[in-house]
Structure formats: C-alpha cells, structure tokens
Length: 121
Image 1 (tube, one colour):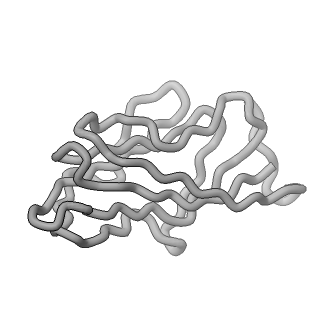
Image 2 (cartoon, rainbow, N blue to C red):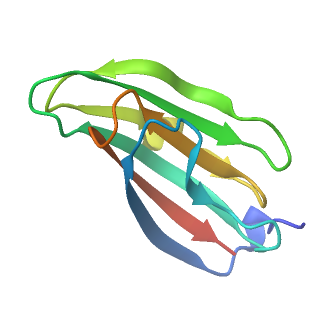
C-alpha cells in the first residue's frame, strides 16, 4: 500500500457517489481499495432526509485500513425534508488506501447520502 505523494499527483478525477441509507449503520458507501495507488479527497458529504413528516437520525463513520469505524457524525437528528452537511470543503478529509466511509440512518429508506470527492493518483 503506497498512496501517491500529493506533490507529484498526475491525475485528479472528480467523482460522486450516492446511496439510500438503511438502518445498518456500517453500510459501506465509499471505499478506497487497499491496492488502488490513489488517495480520495472527500470534499463534502451531504445527507438528505426524504421523509416528508419525520426527522431521522444520521450516523457517518470513517474506517481506517484494518481498523474499527470511527464516528464523524453520530445519531444527528435531521428534520423532515432537510439536509445535513456532515463534511464540507472547509473540513474535507482524505481516504488513504484501504479506508472507507460507512453510514446509516435511524429509519430504513428515509435518507440519502451524497459524497463528492476527488481521486488523486
């Protein structure tokens, strides 16, 4: 596992991933494979509550290669028809090889997640 030196990056590719959130809090949303030779720069993570009536609790985790999930947002209540910005460009984070982002909600199919990131290699 060798992540590229950010000074010598030759390619930056803009990417986005979306998913519906279920009640399994550790559902993998974005993964950087252990042998990718890439670093993912996460610019933002946005969760939308698509339930028009009820609030929903949102949790988002980062798991370092071989480690346990560490919360970056834990059971935060998102009101009905609202969005929650978990990570923005000012508080971005990096996913090294073998790292991933996991998430879940307090109610099945009440929330969606969007992660915008750059793949650096």
